[in-house]
Length: 216
Image 1: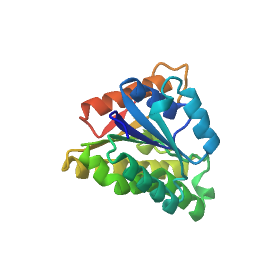
Image 2 (image 1 turned 120 degrees about the vertical axis):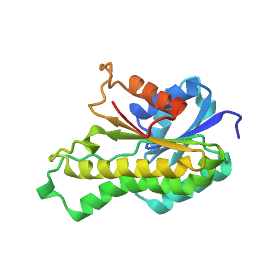
Image 3 (image 1 turned 60 degrees about the vertical axis):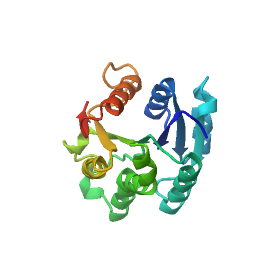
């Protein structure tokens, strides 16, 4: 399909997702965007001026495992190798623990955690073939839980553990997984937490492949 390296972004959005896409496009990648919203995908592609020939879009909802696997398998067959997987899908709801329901906890866990597991399991051979990299956006809430965001706290801790487990397993095959724990609100006006700076940190993680977690 392309002689450029391939980055797949699951949970592509208008702030962090597009900034990470731009950062890797600048350095010669083609980028595949997955989002549940087709209008969002069209808008993202339009925003990536000058790189449209290297941007591919697929519609899928990570909460629908069957559909997600179908789309991932289609991508696997079409592109064969995936050099970088960036998992950025998340569901954040402000809700205290006493008001959490089993259904809400499960739904958030499926999006925030299981979606990553499904993606890596489906694309395992593609990632191993390219000695690939799995990058994951997480939050500082994974290590400092907040009662008012109880479900997000729980799933964030699980996501962190999942990435550490994935990294240990992928290292045996020459691949790598790392999570960036963003310990603050993403803000275009922040020197530390701007989407552009965060994207640069992800690029550094990709290049160095040294540690499985970074706290920002």
